Amino acid sequence: MKLKELLGQSWWERLKPFIESPKFTAIEKFVFSEYQKFKCFPPTDQVFTAFNLCHYDKVKVIILGQDLA
Image 1 (cartoon, helix red, strand yellow):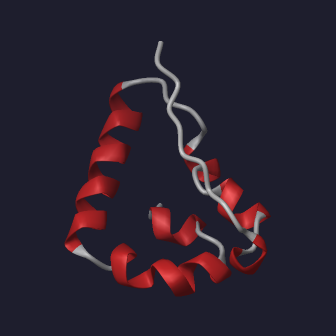
Image 2: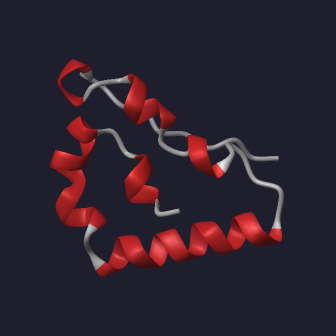
């Protein structure tokens, strides 16, 4: 499974240049290697669920964060 296959169409159109870049490919390889080594969340088929639930044209602000254990 490729991460880009999980991204909603409205986001795909805007993020396509990055998703097709070598940098994204490297990130994708790293993410899947971490999923193979550790128990990770969300499940791989839900990685971009937020993008599928929120159409690009309806989003005004994105807040990024990370939980630290």
